[in-house]
Image (tube, rainbow, N blue to C red; front, top):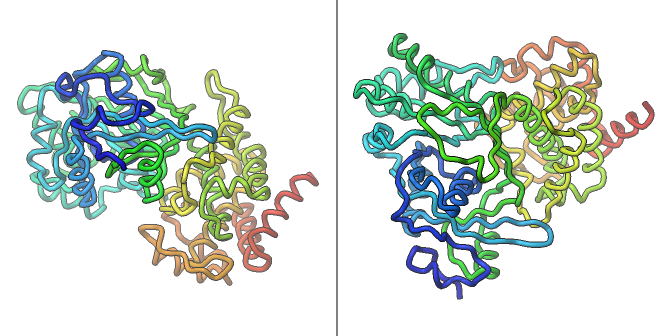
Length: 495
C-alpha cells in the first residue's frame, strides 16, 4: 500500500527513496516563484533542494504562486503534502525518486494583495517565473512585446491595483519596494525563450510604460533581468505516472514530477541583490547565454517540432515511439545535420554534433512518457520561436530549407484537425479555430496558410520559401506524410 506524502510520513518510505536531510524549519524565504508547474519543480526547485541538502544557502527557499485559476488547485494539492514534491528521474535502465522540499509556502492566485506583500518582503531577493513561451504577450510577427493585449491593457487601466498578469504583479512589487526605499529584487525568467531576460524586461517595463514612463525608465535602469537557458524534458503528469510512483516507490503524491536525468541551466551572473551558490550544484554562470540558448532552442525545441507533427499525423502517441520509427528518426537527423546545425553559431566548449547525439538519445528515452500531443501544443507561439528564425537564417545564408519548409507544412496539415487515418485532433492551440480555418483553405490554396503575417511576417515574400512550402503541403495532401519525408530523404542522398 502506498503512503501519502507529507512531512510526517517521510520516514516511512523505502530506503530507495531519497528524502531531505535538512529540516524545513531551517529554510527561509529568498525567492518568490510564479508558475510552480512540473518544469519548475523538476528544474529550479530541484537545484535548490540539492543545494540545501549540501548545507548551503538555506535562506533561499521558494514561496510559490501563480496567475491562473489552475494554479489555485496546484497550490491546494501541494499544501496538503506540506509543499513536498516527488521528483522521479528516469533513464532506460533505471529510475530514481527523491522527495524535494525547496518550496515552503504558496500564495493563492486570487489573493493579489498577499502576493504583492511577499514581493515587497525584504527577504525576497529574486522573483522567478515559468509562465510558458506563450505567456509573455509577444506579437508573433515582430517577436516584440504587445502592449495592446487586453490583459496588459486591463492591468494598465487599473494602475496595477490588482494585477491580472505576472508582469503586473512584478511591476507592482517593484514599485512598492521603490516607494519604501527597498532595493529591487532580480527578475529571473526560467522559460524557454531566446533572450528570456530581455523579453521579461520588455514585458514589465512595457506595461509600466503605459502608466508612467518615468517609472518604466527606472525599471529598465535599476532592475536586473538576467538571461538564462533551461533544459530538462519534463512531461505532463498523468495517472500512468502516479500509478508508477505507487507501485515502484510506495508513494501517494498528488503532484509528482517525472523527468529525464539530464538537466542544464546556464545563467548570466547578474544578481545585484544576491543569489544562491547554484554553481555548487552544476549551474553554469556565463557572461553571455545567447549561444547556449540559440543552440538549445533551434536544435532541441526545433527538433521536437520536427518529429511532433509527422508523428501526430501518423497517430503516434509517445515521443520515444516516434524515435523508434526509423523514418521519423532519420528525418530528424537529416534536418539537424543539413539545415539547422549549419546556421547555429559556435557555442563555447560544445561540439554541436555531440549535442545532436545527446538530443536523439534523450528523445528516445522509453521511460519518459512525453507525448506527441504536448510537443504539438501551441504551435502558433512555438513555430515563430523554434522553426521560423532558423528558416530566415538559412534563407539569408543561401542554405537548404526544404526540410524546414516541410516541418511548417506538416504543422499546417496537423492544424487541419484530423490525422491521416481520419481521427479527429482535439484543439491544441489558443488560436485553434483560426488555424483550422486557415488550414482548410490551404488544402487547395497553400498560400492561404502563409497569409498569417502575425506568425510568418515577411517570410512568405521570399519566393524560395513560399514555393518550398507549397510543394511540401501539396505533396502531403497528395501522397501523405511518409511519402513526403521519404522524398526529402531521397533528395538529400542524391545531393
